[in-house]
Length: 132
View 1 (cartoon, rainbow, N blue to C red):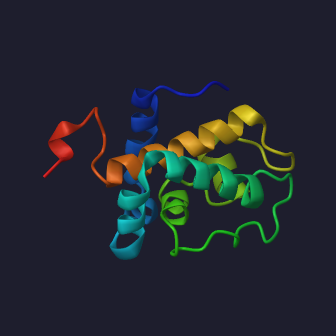
View 2 (cartoon, one colour):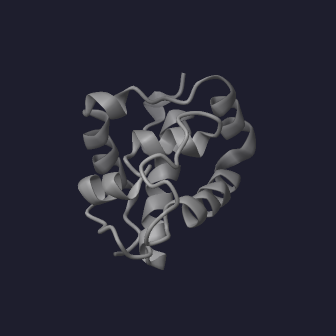
View 3 (cartoon, rainbow, N blue to C red):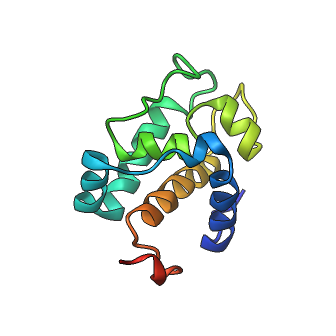
């Protein structure tokens, strides 16, 4: 699995956004401010760290309940992008459960999360019309 191009990430995110549950998630309040002030590189570092600890193990602690709904932009993004637990990863991204995530899979998950955050804060170079 290679790091997907922004276009393919956008297509995946657009498909996820059509799902009623996933479409409810947006960066608001403190999470939005955190993402805007921290910037993309800090968000990427946080995403790598959180994924390594909470999602990458073969059997994550409290899998299915390990990702809070609020408290950090990455958590919100995980629910919006179906990267919140191993069941969602398998169902939506075809990444099997029961084994540790590979380096490429971790990079893919972080890429999906960071692209969603980028789109939320309006920093998408592919969608300048999103700026207001």
